[in-house]
Amino acid sequence: MMRSRPRNLWVVILAGGHGRASVVATSSAQGVCTPKQYCSFNGGPSLLQLTLRRALRLVPRNRIALSVSEPHRRWWEPALWPLRRSGVVVQPSDRGTGLGILLPLLVIARVDPTARFICFPSDHYVENEEVLVESMQQATNAEILNCGKLTLLGISANAMTAGLGYRSPTANDPPVAGICDTGIVAGLVQTLLDMYSKAAPTLLRNLRPVVDEWLDPRVPSAKLISLYAGQPVGDFSRDVLRRQPARLQSATLPPCGWKDVGTPVRLVTTLWALRSQDECGRPPVTEANILHLSLGSASIPAARAMGMQTERLQE
Image (cartoon, rainbow, N blue to C red):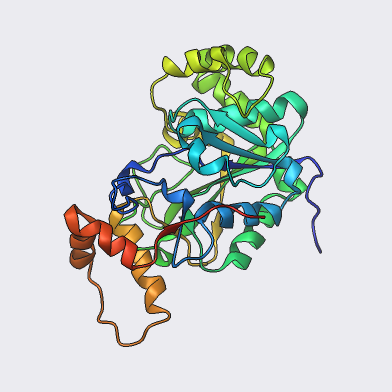
């Protein structure tokens, strides 16, 4: 029997990171680095556009909160489809996923204090969207969201590329082979704000009134800029989730071709894999070869030759 999703479900998309680990592979011949979420594979939709399509499978566009950053305005502003004014939440700078998630949560809570949410990154590649979306739909049914815990979606190690740090997403214990955290999390907005109140009480106390006075989330206010300037880079998983494992539960994604392209090796490996689907007879690419292609002067033409392009986001 189908379980209903709540009408006040929101999607939070993280698109503010600069992708420092893959900066070489997404640089142009002129040395301009395009954050990988604004890049497309083989000339198709960009990673961000694919993520937005995924979000629209779950909620209407007026319940999407897209967390971007001011330094990336040249990429997202001209062509981003017209989400409602509060749909695009602009950070003054990239201070990591801790603030990247908290800021849009407070924007949502201001208009919908009882909201539910699912949050996911914009820079991951998925081969089978149907499997991923179905798992997201299951994680956002009302019964699971109302249980008072956050649900973390992981993926089994045998469905992943080697080299990722497999760990149990719900424990402070040493890494456990078998489950990798995908960065997808769902629950009540208030549940996560409660966790921030314990993990980063000063930050939450200082940020909330700034957001309450913020007139246009597309334009960082002077107070927000000042607050960000004094904040260190924080990690949501390390600084918030791992400190409160009792507030978490996990679910495992079926194999869906999910790939984290956060390093040059994994990025170029994914590009080779996509190209090999259309071309026969290509010799196998080893990790050593990929590393050679990903780093140094050979990396830029290699990435361009494999079809990495930037594109405007169109509706």
